[in-house]
Image (cartoon, rainbow, N blue to C red; front, side):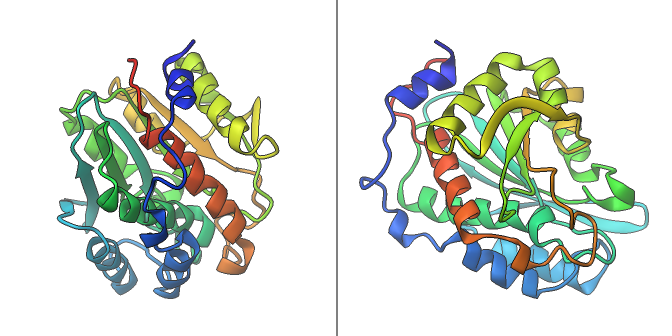
Length: 266
């Protein structure tokens, strides 16, 4: 039995968590998207950075300057008794794209998860990683590249979530993730299928350029969790009405199943 399958069998999950204190991801998304475009170098970019930092306790802002622009990775770390895991999302948006699903859905989930982690300290070490500069010129992955090149943590794995708020949510296995870490992908999809079998599809459909590639490049075990069948991607129509409270709720509970195991077997 793989590590994450063991975790699933002995999960601390449900009414024992003070999740009622967490703001629902959809409410975070509503406010975050109202900021407008989050293109690096713009006022909206700074406002979005401040919004994320404001809703985290003792967040770390890792600033870097490149391409005549300041970028800001944001990290929130929770100590634990075991090897660390990371959950990552990018928070910037492309020019002309509101980025509700593309970027916004991941941010809203991480902020809602942060609420729960504050009130329910995890047994494992968990880092929430908000990467900047993913959408620059298509997908330059600037923030994740900056993070990975300087990473000193020995992560068990990092999952990169992106475009997971689609009202018609279906998440296929991502080809690059399977190529490098097939057993980890199997374990993550087994957890997902136990929660939402119609959402997590154990078949490769796409090979995606996303922040997980930067992490893999530097030897970090990373898996991309993305619904790429989204017709509004990188367009002015990527707005909150295309996103679903139910999809975000499914993904929130999926993340809970990963960060609250009662038994760790690495």
